[in-house]
Image (cartoon, rainbow, N blue to C red; front, top):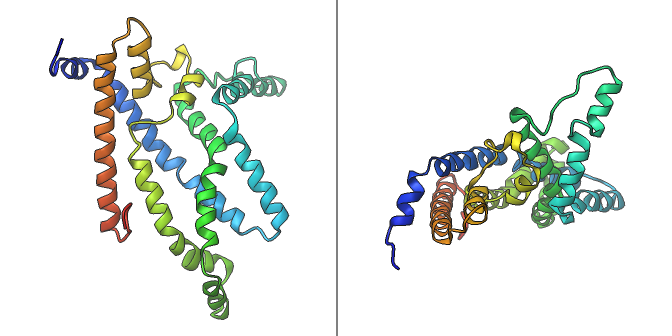
Length: 250
């Protein structure tokens, strides 16, 4: 039977839903601040490498973690950061107290950012490396003739040419503020931080599969998420154009 707007009414009456929305925004805004610059910095560092063999080897090492499943990565992190893990074993050997890394609300978000950066920075840096390879070398030659140092060439040649790519990637990242991170949080979460890590995707999973499946309710939440992401995407695109960028569509 047709239920009209009944599912949406239930959604906005649920305090857990509103809490998951703010949790999602809090975590993903943190991702923009702490994770988004990491592949850019990595690409710039790799671009400055003089030896081609070293550059290829470093790029392979940094890209490899992207192909690991979050199940494997979460197992490594658990074995390293658990109360009986490697890091606490080192602290005990040094005569220090153990730290509950995975059960600390203050440390959970930094662990998310660090592990995600380690896993995906190398892969995301490929986009920026491709943009860097398209920069006209004559610009660098002209800068050298003008007496520019490597740092000055980075600031006045490399970054201005990289700016359009950075803007496009930033707009796409803003357009995904309400999604992302489900596999990571699902595998790293535990009862001690359950209230702090229930993002919207986790909430949808819990509502749909945690008890009696309610696909109409979860579909209403998914539609809300898509609409909000679309609004963020359009707003970010218009903001990029006002700041002098080309936006997504030139």
